[in-house]
Image (cartoon, rainbow, N blue to C red; front, side, top):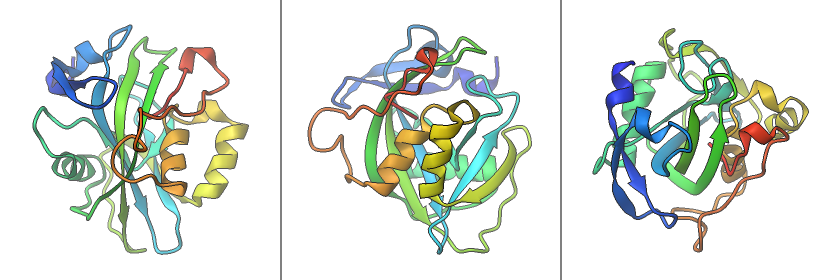
Length: 203
């Protein structure tokens, strides 16, 4: 087990209120425990978003394309602090100014590793310069690329298994922002993938 698997995450109720804590490993064992997470979108001046292909060593959805970075704040830790820490660790960049554009609640089972994602996911956006320096950690990131998010939505429909199951919902929040909180009502659900083993309400 990697050291990160022993870190604590914040368990939450359906409305996002805190419901205790568990380790990363415990929260991602079937059937999964709903916990707080974040997904960061880096947007360049032309509107493109940065994607990373998750390294082969990842315990959940390895070698799938995903947004710039994802992670979990420790209990009591601010989302911005936690997200900038992961940007530094995974991509060697930041800190950046982050704005929450919505919340995405999703569930997905990894058919390869057997792990489960069940997350109350805060989608965070940062506008970055075209020459943003990147130094990806190869133990975290296999490769990176920039893509127009509208084109990305099309690619997600054509070849969903090339992408992490939460990415569609994250991009949806970018293109159709709702602001902080779960759209002012109950937590939103994303669009399911066409693979029943990756039921997604999304990260």
